[in-house]
Image (cartoon, rainbow, N blue to C red; front, top):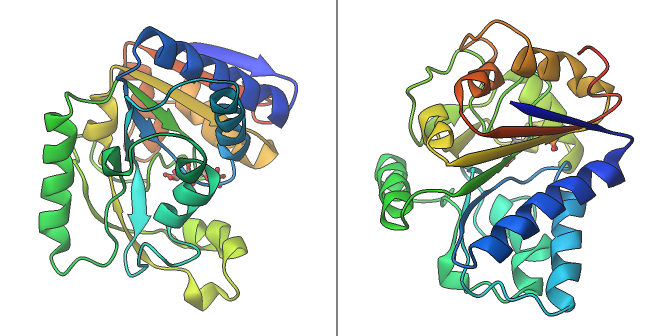
Length: 240
Ligand code: F6R
């Protein structure tokens, strides 16, 4: 595990964008696993800037980690919307090569099965980008999720619902379920890059990097992966 400690959010974003750009240059047809949330916002901005300077993203395929159950792809807080607004609509990735689970499918179990199948058909994920929850979740795999889980419907924990309430008008509007790639799905990526900033992530980062490996701290599983880079600002690294 390679831990890179930087000064602040901007430096974290630059470092992660740099790693991704290197991957895209080395393999223009990369399959990228992508995250939403506050952490990667500036990374997407930097990738868009890179595209505006002439970089070609048309060979990429992307798989997002998760989507809220109950939110359509047009819903302003859906992760599909987030990805369109912050990244996809500003670059030349082919829309048909951008995968985000559907939150409004009639058969969520089948949606999960098909998602796993699409990842396999694409040849697996070359580089998975992750944020981390204050409870150390990765994707929406909350504490207690078995390490052999694959894409499935998950219940969001109280702390995640509270953390995500900032994006909704009232806490009642925050979805309580999501479709999330599983821990095993994430661990099958060839390379993993996790980013975190701020003191609210310090305990989770300690658990991910130095804690006991246990499903109670989902990100601790990353200690078992052969190629992980963790990019954190000083506040998130303060317990290391
Ligand atoms: C997002 C995801 C989550 C977030 C995590 C951190 O697709 O899967 O695991 O990465 O909740 O969220 P932020 O970055 O908003 O603190």
